[in-house]
Image 1 (cartoon, rainbow, N blue to C red):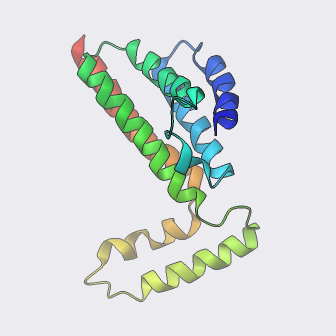
Image 2 (image 1 turned 135 degrees about the vertical axis):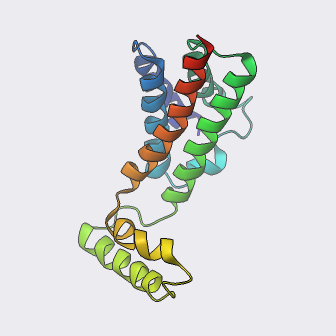
Length: 164
């Protein structure tokens, strides 16, 4: 774990030099997400034994230093980093457990099966499921992840803007 996180620290060192802390947070989140989806086991060990895995803390620190560049209180910074890292780790963990490395045609067949099951639900009782079934069938995991991360970062951006 520490070796993988060390590779991420090198990426984070480059990302952290960008002029826009919100964009840097997005890039850091994406880098961590990609590391987890490439290694199914990583999420389970990410923040365990941080005394023996200092690179996990270095990555966490990179998130924190970007938030420190924003006009937020310490509490807002803590909540922002906690929410962002929790989202990245949670979604990365979930998506890493799905079918990784599945060829596009196999993924399409799997998604069609899932969507067929969704469409079998009563549309009167499950109108949302029926509305988004096509979106779900054709979604890309990374795009879906980034959409959620962008929602979180929009909230951080609003807190920063309202402080000024």
